Length: 264
Image (cartoon, rainbow, N blue to C red; front, side, top):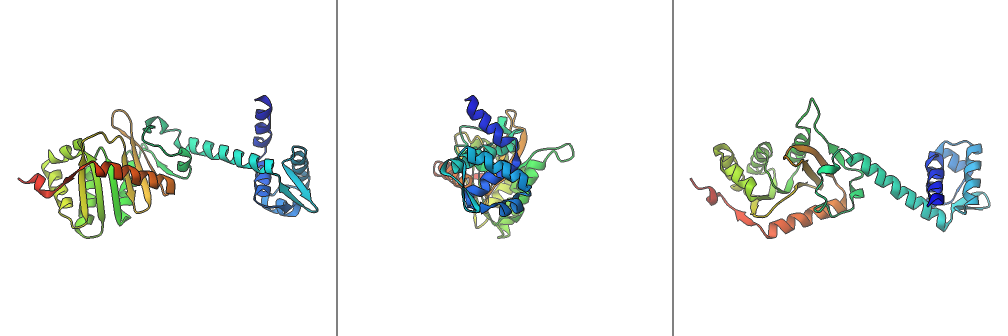
């Protein structure tokens, strides 16, 4: 363990070492190329390459250096570690609110996600992020335990005007909350009356608010009191596949909702 940690420290203490090994794991390069791509001096490169050769991470062929099989292994493993740490930094402030049992994909697929959190000047920033996506998207598919008034109004208006295809499945509690308010009930009926809109009601628990807006997945994350803490959105293929599977699961076991269900 200690010797392995020493090797991790050896790489981690020098960005040039990490970059040189990554470059050589891609393809062979000579020292001039390495100097151009890393900005390191020839003296620095000489020390790095000597250290790598001593560890059998690289080998020299005439004027070029190439990573060995173990060098590529180390580069790939260290790169994975960097990806994990980058993802952890991105999610550090909201990880306690993520429903672990629902997010069955590797969280490294959120490494490039946009995380929007409330601020003193923009307390509704997470919701606004979703509304911005919904305002531009041509297709929205959603599964959620809530249907925000602003999101409902926006989707109903755009679906009515023929600018939006909408498919959503919501918990019974979310629909009941809308039905209990006269104005929101009318807006929901307007959405249901749109030509390209479908809504279903799920009688079980929907622990997460998820939307697929065109190719982007948006997740609204709340704390145990129901307070919105963050919006996470990504166009990662794996996350989108997970979201589509989740939507299909809820959709298949939900009950269609129609305008007739709200007859006065």
